[in-house]
Image (cartoon, rainbow, N blue to C red; front, top):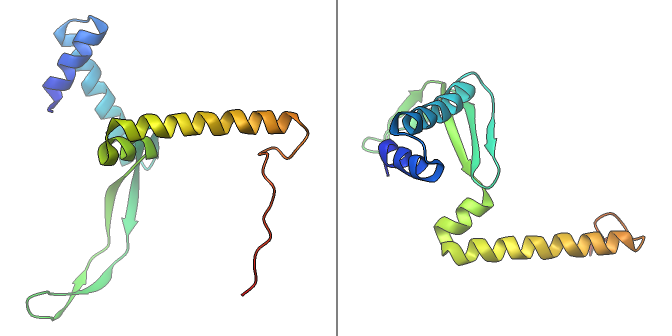
Length: 131
């Protein structure tokens, strides 16, 4: 999928004209890009996190000759996908729906147990076994 395809979907969903849809997509990506470039972390729940990372200088080896090579320090953009994103990509849509159902059930259980006067999470601490 390319940017124009994404703009077409936005246009259909919001019943906007083509220019508005393209502007929306451009503004969305420009905002994320500028925020990450300035050092901010951009987090979209259920999708992922973009952030700027500094990699220190290091010594590496040339795989062909085995000679040591100095790799300079650099800054990179990093993306960490969210659990829902991973579930859909790796396990299909069923895995994502199942994950949401499990999360909803846990939330209900925690709320019920918390209301009965137990700990906030409704969980008892387990004793660690010493080896």
